[in-house]
Amino acid sequence: MDRTVPSSGNEEIKLYMRTYYSLLRSSHAVQIKTLREAHKRMHSALHILADCSTPDMSAFIYAILRMPACLGQIKHVVMGQSTSVFAKHAYDVKSWQLVSAPGRRRRSLYDGDKTLALYIASRSDIDDIVPILTAYQIERQKLHDLLGKKRPIALLEQIRDEDMGVPMGEHLAELAAFADISVGDMKKLTLVWRGETAVRLLEIAQNRQRLSIRSLAGSLADYKRATRRWWQRVEDSLAHINFDERPVYFVSSNTHSMSNLLSGFALQNEEILDEFIHEKGARSLLKERHDIHERYVPSSYANFMYYVLKKYEQSHPEMVKKRIAWEQAAGIVRVPSSHAFDIEVQVVELNKLNLDNLDGRLRIDQIEKMKQSDALIVNIDYPLGLAAYQVLSEIARNIDEVRGVYIMGKAATLNGRIGDVMIPNVIHDEHSLNTYMINNCFTAADITPYLAYGTVMDNQKAITAPGTFLQNENHMSVFYQEGYTDLEMEAGPYLSSVYEMTRPKRHPYNELVNLHNAPFPIGLLHYASDTPFSKGKNLGSQNLSYFGMDPTYATMTAVLRAIFAAEVKE
Image (cartoon, rainbow, N blue to C red; front, side, top):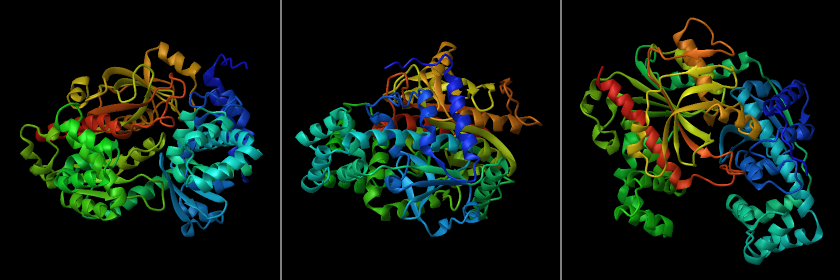
């Protein structure tokens, strides 16, 4: 089959986006099937077999990991910014079931029948949701055509009844052959669906699914209104903190690495976690613990314990309550999202930290001066795409002084490996078409001492893409020829907000923007989770797992050390 890439990969991406935005202006639901051809013509690097009859299991698994488990039952998806928006259109989502996806933080509610409501924070959520659903429907249709025959259905029923729902051995190989995929790909699917594998594949085999999608509101005012309500909840929940009177270090990262490094909770409960490892009898965990102690591997023991704590909390919810209470005593307060988009906030009062419990990697000279600090860290669970601009702009309007902006998160690498760390000082933003130049406050020397497995590459050039599926090899190759190697989704929107924090006007469009003279440090750190030039290699086909802890904690250690160093100099 001819799979010639169009002369302009970017034009095909733009055409796809124009297609679904024009359709979503309709007051009625749009059938996902109308987007299939435009999706295929894009030749997405994340969906390389879209136009083939062979299933693309990497794209399929990527999609199902980023939607709630009820995806197989639904017919309609509705998108809105707030509960009031849904209510205006007769969707009483307050009574619906809260559901979640393992690979995407998005507030999602299921009516228990055929409708899924998704909260969106910016148009980047649309650029994420629509291609995911389209890729899912394309690949589900392929599986339906291949498995919806007498022999595959009989095999799936046998696996369901005799093998506890999980295909193994000869049944695994036979099922993979029916589905026209490799045994390895079928194994990856069983790791996601586990005991539900046969049941879900039977549902696919025996029933067609026709998805529709509707956008209930999409104006910039709607997004700003939702963001304002989100921050208002933070202020209301922390009434004892006057954000407009205290200096703030803004961090965009996640909600586990910072609290683990600052609170010391995992290491204070080492004995309990150690018992859990032995009781669980997990050979991989026991071996890793032994190898770290014997220094057979360079892994951090603290990182390992943070990973074990996460596993322990999954089966011991009382430990979560204990940890949150411990964090609050150390000046670390969480504000979860409620009736809005799913971005949790952590606020850290530096003068309340128990310095004796800090992770050893955070010890710096004169750290005791932190007790005299009145500064806060506001850490948000990194948002998706343009929501970054909305969030930072809202926070900046409601605080007095910004002492630093630090952004860490996942990215695709065009020249490295999964687990590497990239430090850009040039960022091209596909949203504004601006190219931002910054003095990144981090260098490789700030990360290397704390990174066991990956490589640190500083002085890089990054591209902020509109969506994970909205990229193709031709478009990436053009940027790669210009030295761009770091592909992510948030840096550009954040820097558009930084521009407006430092200049008396709105950020420009399609310009070269110099932010070298920003009045506060700017730090961008990206750790590689995808290698799009390696066909099909993404977090749908593999997972960072425990080794993802290495770049996550190395970059967060660098961020906190930078904040501490700045604060003790005040």
